[in-house]
Image (cartoon, rainbow, N blue to C red; front, side):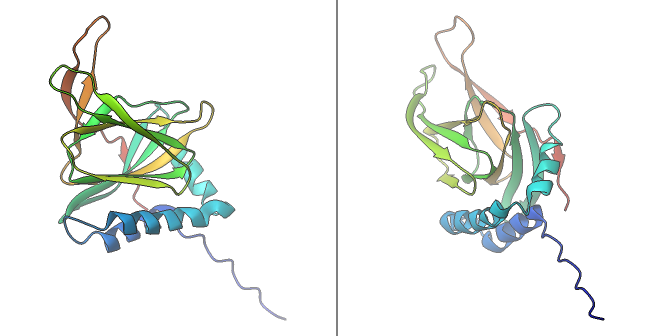
Length: 200
C-alpha cells in the first residue's frame, strides 16, 4: 500500500520577511528598490490564502487599536522592522521620522501615504502628494529634514497590516500638531512605542 506524503507546512510569513531583510541589509545604505521587490514578492505569494491564518493571528494581537509589533532589531547595521496593525480608518498625525531611510509595505488591506513639505517654525506642513498602496505594494524614502508623512488605513470597515522598515537607531520622530483654536503648529519629539514582539 502506498503511503501518503505528509502535507508541507506553510512557511512562516514573518520568518520569510525577516530573512529577506537580513539578506538585503548589509550596510547603512541598502538597495531599497530591491528590498521592496523581494518583500513584495513574499507577500504576493500569499494571494492564494496561504498566510491568512497567520495574518489573522497577528491582527488578533491588536486589542487596543493601532499596534506596533517588532519583528527585527539590528544593531550593526542599525535598523528595525515593525508590523503595524491599523484599525479601520485609522490616521496617524503628520510626522517626520529620524532614520536614514524608511519603507512601508502592505501585507493586508490598503494604505494611503500623504507626503508633506515642512515649513518654517510654526507654519503648517503643506501637502505635496498622495500615494495609495495595496497588498504587496511598497513605498520607500530616504531621510529628509524637509519632508513629513501621514498614513491612513483606506478602509472604514477592515483592518490593515503593514511592514515598517526604519533605518537607524531606535525609531524617533517629530510630531506636528496644532491644538484647537491655535494658529501655530507645534513640533513634539517622540519615540515610537512598541507594543510587543513577534518571535517566529
